[in-house]
Length: 119
Image (cartoon, one colour):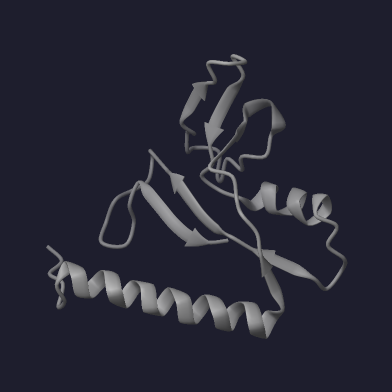
């Protein structure tokens, strides 16, 4: 079993420091702009990338409209949509922080059903 060399608090501080440094440098060097990503998309939009076709998204319906929604587990399709929707030109780019739930993920020391990653 994995044994951390730091306390939980030290680990959280270190993660925050590394993420902030990396995010700032990535955006600066690649001239990327940060945008907010959706936590869920409508099922009919087709914007939830179903990865390799095996992972099943978490689905639910919205009380107000009854519309079916899916929690995102990949933003690949959404990012292409966003580049067009936000009017980005060739040579410009964006990045986002994706939070997702991948219920079919193989769990180990570096993989969880909860995903918090840059995309």
